[in-house]
Structures are given as structure tokens and as C-alpha cells.
Length: 318
Image 1 (tube, helix red, strand yellow):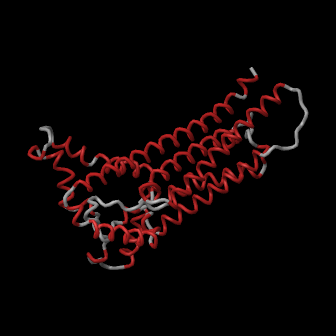
Image 2 (cartoon, rainbow, N blue to C red; image 1 turned 30 degrees about the horizontal axis):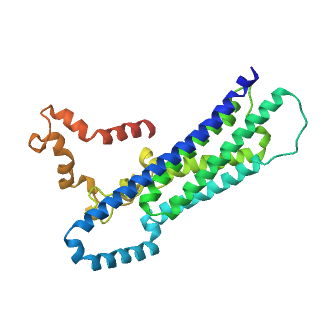
Image 3 (cartoon, rainbow, N blue to C red; image 1 turned 180 degrees about the vertical axis):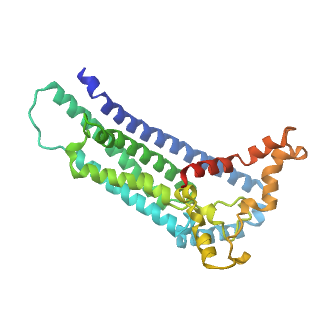
């Protein structure tokens, strides 16, 4: 009966441990797959005939690319703004790790032979240890996301976002949801101001920053990127949901009696006619490989993601 009383704390500790372990294993597999793909690509290049004749120029290009990447590392991460948000998240992860270590330090021991007190102490120690390991791991992921090259930092950043959101959900269930009841209280209320500091930092790094961080521009055709991307392609998730990325052009139209086409935002490269043909004809044109079916089904398959985002945005926007 007493063990069942503290079962949620043990379960939450195990969830943190399993999530951290699964993330570490998955990230390691991703790194191994990337290294294997890079090795196979290098072997194919070495086997080509043009490799021997262009080896000197290729080495010069690689060295030049490394020099440029060193000087413009923030641009490779998506720009200075995105890199600044990543640095802020890393600082928040370090602060959260420090607070977790502080709360896990042993306090003055109280002699007690009460079985319930011993079970509670054991459950809390297990939870604090799992929290320290998880926050330490998130700090490591945050460090990788701001120091590694783009191909390594992107998966680390994805794992970091998922882990931080999971930790915040556990804190919500343990310490915020009981505040909405009359019969329970936060399980970590004994931590005092440290608890609320951790919750505030977690809310910022797991919810606020991911929502307001601009998205990195990803060209439709990597060989032909747009000189200036459309604002929607770099808008944050919150801006996408509330359509605030349209505010500048709306405000400009409000101040001007007439807008010329030069004042309008550039067209997104995914809406270029040549790119629309590449994307849609495989679902609409039987001569391009499409199945013979109704045109409406093909159109819904082409614009399924766009229509889903529009539906979500219409539910959230006022």
C-alpha cells in the first residue's frame, strides 16, 4: 500500500531515465548512419575518373569552405537570430542542471525508522538522480547544437526539444496540476523557490523558445535556393499559427495608398511553376507516373500538408 503511494514518483523517474537512454541510443545510431553514408559517398567519389583530375581543386574548395564556416558558423546554424535562441536555450539547460544538482545534494539527515518516511526519501532520491542525469544530458545536447556542424546539430536539437518538453510535462503533473485541486499539493514543494525557478526555466526553454524561434530556411531545390526566402518560410511556429508574419505587409498596406509589386514579399520557391510541376505532376499527371484516379484525390494529396496547417491556424487564430 505504501509502495503504491509512491509508485508515480518511481514511474516518473523511470520515464526520465528511459527517455534519456532511448534518445542517446537513437542519436548514436543516427550518427553512425551519417558516418556510413558519408563513407560510402567518399568511396564513390574516389572511384570516379574525375576525382583524380580534380583532386587538387576539390581540396582547395574544402579548405576554403572550412574557413568560411569558421567565420560564419552562426549563418550555417540558420542565422544569428536562430543561433542566439539556441545559445539562450543552452544557457537555460545549464541553469536547470545546476538547480537540479543543488536540490539533489544531501541535506541534514533525520533519524527516522518510519517505513513511510524511508520510502518517500528513497523515491525522491531516485527522482532527483534521474532528473540530474536527464538535465545533464540535455545540457550536453544543447552544447552540441551550438558547437557542431549543421548535420550533427540538427538531430541533437530535435532530441533536446523532445526531452525538455517531456521533463516539463512531468513537472506539470507533479507540481502544477495539484495547484488546481483542493486535496493535493505539489510533490516538490519542499524545494521552495528552487522548484519555481526550475519550472520557469523549463517553461522558457521547452515551450516559449521553440514557439518563437524562427525556422531555418530550407530550399525546395538545394541546387537552386532563393535569394530572399518568403517570410512564411522562416516564420516561427507561433507566427505561423497566429499569422503574425503577415503583419509587416499589412501595416505597410495600411500606410500606403497603393502597393507596387516591388513592395510585396518575394514568392516562395516552393510556389515556382517549375517546382510545382515537380511536386504535383507525379500525383496528377498519368504520363508522369500518377495513378488513374479522380483529380480531387490527387489535389488533396499534393496540398494535404498545406491544408492541414491552414485548418490548425484557423482554429487558433482569433
